[in-house]
Image 1 (cartoon, chains in turn orange, red):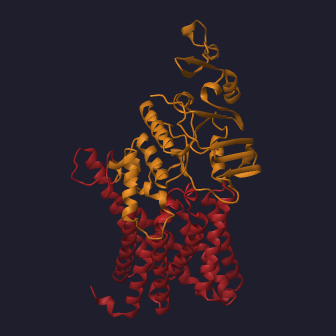
Image 2 (cartoon, chains in turn purple, orange; image 1 turned 180 degrees about the vertical axis):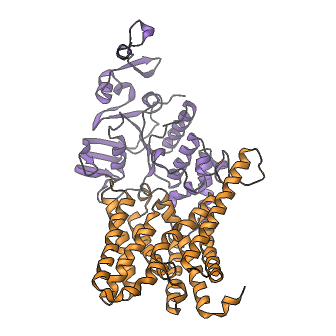
Image 3 (cartoon, chains in turn purple, green; image 1 turned 45 degrees about the vertical axis):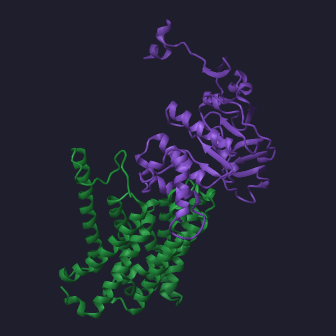
Length: 279
Length: 290
């Protein structure tokens, strides 16, 4: 199922706003002069090469990077003044998979800052399992996090974010390392959440999946190269500026597809690979 | 079997060893899971420096050493937070060895009181008096209260310190409070185990418990019980084999660790052999933990 069109919404309030923001981690700027705004209820995908600043942009929304100039605002408040609450799903490669926690314990962390009792209230537990039911991991509650598949692990951390009842959901490469079916399931789940009013901003390397599923894309490379609906933004010129490599864009039966430009250097095409000669 | 219990000094030592073992086992879980096992070793050395300084300026040992350890722990946290390319073990190495060196420097300058620090270095559990017991008890209560009150925040901060602040948890404050509790734990443990053996007490019980469970709640309880049990049994053993109490406790703990390791490995081996009777402590696909 493709659903590149945004859901019907009359919402006009801005939830995330970058005003000529230049950010980094104390050293050289990772992002320069970023200006963009995300409206409540948007579903936004960020694409760009590794090291382009996608994660930095997400972390800037959370107030976790240094803003050298300009401003980043969430819900109208500067993140430098007040750190916003948001459901954040980090890249799974940052997780210590040997840490002794179960899926249930990970999800319950979503409200760890609520109350001072060492145990979770029964109501919270019920709600946590309701969230887990929603994302299809209710039967995995007692499992250790390492005993899950990649897609289940992604859902467990998505569950933690959802359990915190966020109006803003930030996901760093939620489709990394999963198969196509699982990737589709995750994107459909995010789309469902978006239709319930949750603003979703995610980074990904799956540029074709973004074109197929998301209504809005931001191309990032040390700054914002372009933004808009994928069908408009995905042009050879913009993608080359984003990735620094030529890319072919194909429009076929309403779909926008990005293909790698082939390099005919193998012997199957009658040419000797240059390295082969050296060897 | 009950012969040593007729001696008051032994009973006091037994209470102290059991409490310190449990306390180190409890706090050690967070230390090990934060991959900062070396901090127990380093901080106990740093506190040794603080103990000497407090002696020189005439400050109460517990107050001076605790403050010194607290400041050292905070410095370690600050160095690693402000300069991310400095790993925790390197920061621990710098801060704590400098502090230890300061203690050595003062001892070499004021040689007259060198002997007073034998207990701090090597432990003198049989010299534990009533005030030491009260200090250990107070520290144990404070640590248990802290862990209970901050339980869910501490879990998140330990598991995912980068992300916890985005969910409304002040990791800075968690670190401050944890540093305070850790410093206090090491100070009250010095009399029992000595600077040189505290690190082992902080690490062995949690690692042993980790071999037996993958559930955090169980780990906390099992590590505390293991630490307390090893403190109790190790001291009892030291009476009969007439050896240093600190060494006896640590070696007893190491023995329990080896037993847990064999049990865990045997479970895995039996599981791989298709025999599911023995419990496995590794994480097989589909494993569930209550």
